[in-house]
Image (cartoon, rainbow, N blue to C red; front, side):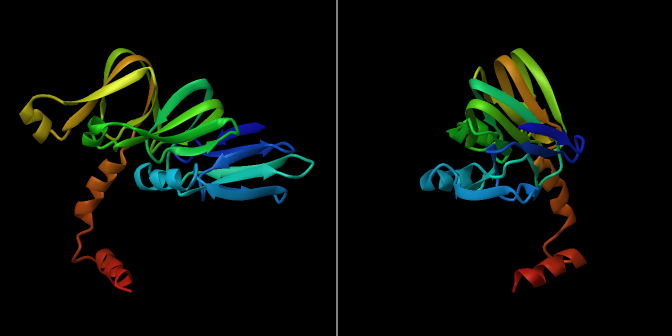
Length: 236
């Protein structure tokens, strides 16, 4: 299987050249285009109960798609993500990789992933109560909102909430205030994550929560043509 990541950091997408019999699993809706010799099969994302948990708490889809080349010649599959940003390729050889909920894009046949408890600290830091645990042998592709920054940590490192994208099981974290009480609550930073251990972490340069906070005051529920239009459609 030949793989190319294209589109730059802002609008990354993946081109898979699947040989005969080769396949890849993706999130529903990730396929942008494909050759006619590729078959797609939808299945529950890890079983019915697991799929429900992934949908409710992991920000992942209820189903997962498997694309497989059933022809006798190479076939091309193009996969993208819904939000603008960079897609990372990460190879696993039996180790574990934790992802921010909603980051998973695609995985090769040897990759498994499931919902994992992240803890109250993660919830307070607005990272969610759960995280995605990827493991097995193969390649996983996952996406950021914005560009990806990689940091090698040996000791401690501070990450603002909403920017932590992925990390290995050799890393742990706990919540703390960004500064003193006054600075934390009135300086705009609030609670942050203190990463601890020795390993690699990846951060996303943009935060969905930050975007929502920036947009909300600009779209009031009443007044303004956009909000009035949304109210009309929402009432039908």
